[in-house]
Length: 262
Image (cartoon, rainbow, N blue to C red; front, side, top):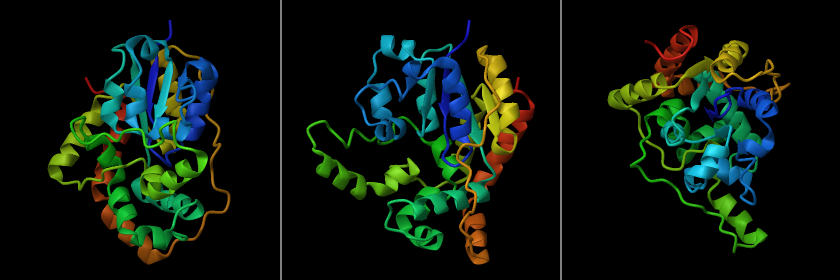
């Protein structure tokens, strides 16, 4: 019998390809947020309150949960859940994220503008560590799009909260040695850890752990002609993701040990 999967989907790590493979195996009707009914998918994917509001029966019926949320959320579901995630080399991940922000409906119109925005820089500096060091006792955002808002009002809310929507980090935190240690410890609790450099190996190990027939992932969201990044911006980003480099190395070690260390 297959086991449910909770996938902590870190932005710009190849997750679109991976989640498509898993969703095909379990069905969209048993996937969150696809199974979230009327709830706007973008909100359900990035704000924990939607998932945490489901009762035990609703959570138990899900076979696949894929969210852009802090890692602690993965441990709030049924105990037989396979917790899985993928990390990416952080400089490349951050540059890809900056390109996405600049190419979207955000006030920043270039990767440089995005990085120089204090709200974006705070969220993308050691981004992966922020997600894995976060704690349940920190502020959890509530639903910013209640049903009583009309479409114009919802658009205004989305615009005002664009930093959160574009990063899935609502309350940025500064990473230090203690936070890094927490991030490494949390990542090591995951059952299947992979890296973007070896998505095929990750999906293969996840198929074995979950007992699901998962097809090798396709690269569904690859940028064909990425926006050029200035050398000085690359170096600034590199300095700002030093802790993420360490976390990514831990992910690489875990990926070669086929899951959590003994």
